[in-house]
Image (cartoon, rainbow, N blue to C red):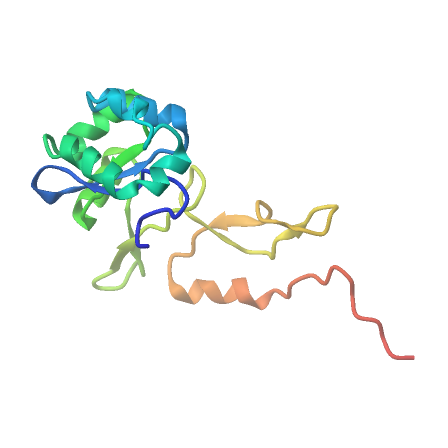
Length: 184
């Protein structure tokens, strides 16, 4: 299966110029019509093999051949601008260095120095979760909602600066929603 969704088409990576990949996630028929228009092939949306998602899934091989026939005329970055403007969800498949450059351009601080004061400090990818102050780790177990389900938004703190700081996170016992009964 790889990057292909089994029941949505096209929802996978497609080849563009020079074999570079574009991830496309067209989740409904309206988005497919927009994709087809932006590719300069509105007739694809009228083709009975591709008009509805169920049809596109059944005829995926022909669909991919038709889409890649258009996509090979430009790079994933060129298509991303045009398709995104047309409300067709997509994005280039980046190399690690391209992903880090993009994150830096977006102001996301993609690399974190760990072990301040060590020579040399360790540089690691910044975890992709957090608040405006940076990625977070939990200092307390998740709270519980009135329905007894975990409330994952409770207890977040700034990320630790070194692995040694993680210890305090695991020292706290998880609350028991229904404490065990004591033997009488």
